[in-house]
Length: 205
Figure 1 (cartoon, rainbow, N blue to C red):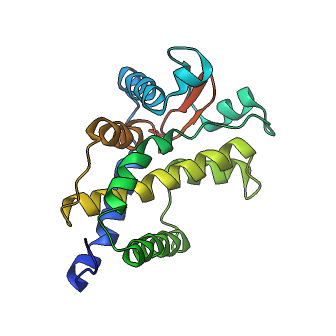
Figure 2: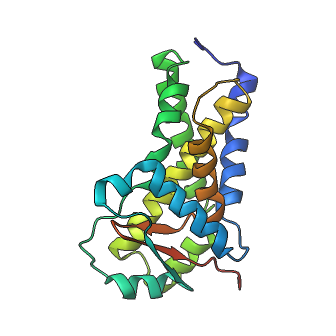
């Protein structure tokens, strides 16, 4: 049971946040076959096929966020599925290796790191482009994508820190690998019951 961390270990947390931001905020063009495989595996691991009775979602690729929003509708009432939750079994196994109070402090500390970074304009380049187009009044689909993106980065950074630095273990390698692939290969996605929207990265910036 991990009950406390050294000051040296705590000082590594911002570096892990930056590491996963860099992976998510890559400006390289998406590799569609990799994205397709990642999304399909994520749906399977989360169990959407059993819930909705189909094997794989229809993937819709868009060159810009604006195109995706126009497809959905600015005030879309559709609620996206949260593919990020596929990593929950890994989180629970890692969390069980911590004293409860320490685990809570870690989540809060990482959240504070994120808030400080946003305050200094450290942001996703795609998000920066979206803000230029829409200002502060963002369409609902964009707000949902931002929330999911932020959740993936925070979860990935903390889990990577716990596994790599603290030696935490889990028995779900496929879930962990698929989750990290979502961050690296298709962080800006919106999944629905039978289709999933994926936005191209702004490679022209």
